[in-house]
Image 1 (cartoon, rainbow over the protein chains, first blue to last red):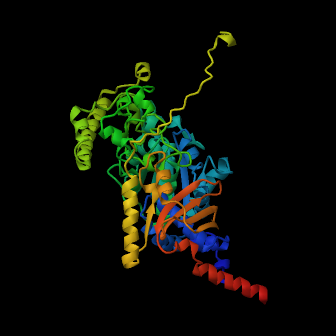
Image 2: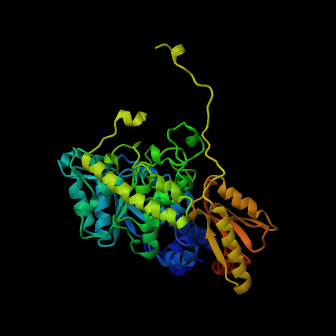
Image 3: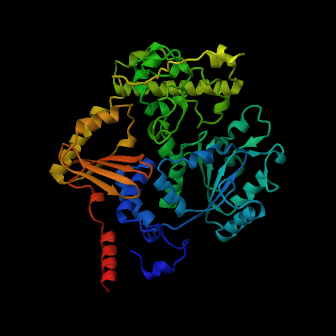
Length: 370
Length: 138
């Protein structure tokens, strides 16, 4: 219901509930929006009323998005978020004051928009960063003649929180890969005095990006993070643990090549180099392309793109480590036993991955032909 | 290299990974629905299960939906894109599917209740309706 007091408010002063009602969005539609949001944020459906209550009274925050050494894949991913209606509401609701790929303004006008947003909302705006920051030579990447480092440090000062989007911003990503010619570093390596939410992936799943934004909008806090600064709701479980092919792994049924009987039957891709056991992300449940599928469902091993140094991890098609007969045997025991074995193997795999990183193994054409 | 010498493959084989040995999550989920129905009968407690939160292999969601079947009620809602609310052949077990403007599913829930809340007229909308009807009669 629109009343005179809400009519007089500017868009920035209105709560989300007021914005929606003034746009003719019914309460029923708002409930649908909240249900989709709960599902997107991997929250229990019991949270739907709480989300509705929180969003109802939340206010429109300013968002400044900085893009440094990146390929624009993260923005491409975000703008293809499949829950289009929900996302468009979120983008109606946040004030995206600076994003040099999406904004209409260019040159001085664009930089002025960033400076104005910083000044007006000092201490309150959200800063989103994609891309790594080159420390080797500032000339590797500049925007409006400002080095990435200077722009980040200046913009971070007034941010309430920072969301590092994509593996480049979270861990340095491909620019950071050995031998790291630009001296690329992550946001977290430079900023120590602000809350940082890491949303890795190359690119991250679109709804994971919007889910983190929505969480901030809904609760005004940062979500619970893991030891790498990633939101646990999306990165709390390994791809392996949520993979629909996991039962084949537990039974010791593996594809040995991309076109053998095992591959055709959809068996586990572990021996083809799947990094699912050491990769924490939501691909196996949230999926990609309108929730259609994810790499493993399409028959390709997980590359581990949401983990630090995935590019230097020792070959995409090299198995992390070979399962032993004991693992196969586990299948005849209880499910709990299988999980325990999975954890032990996970630890083995972590060690193997770390040693591969230490040895700087590179993917060769031989690996690709395996 | 002439064009004629380039081998052309005419037969395309799709690698469809459907098997009888899938996640084994179908039966536990159906049991969860049974327990939720029991709670509804005993205490009136309603439950919602988010189908997107459970790892399911290709074809398994269809298996669940086929088992639940179609009951007496089918409703379509025009709420920021289409939503479908259907009662399954098990009274009290509802399937709520939300679509976006492009017709893609954005969320799907199994609700165990006498009536999903989204089907009910909402207080805020009723108040708004009252204002509007008052306005046109003034």
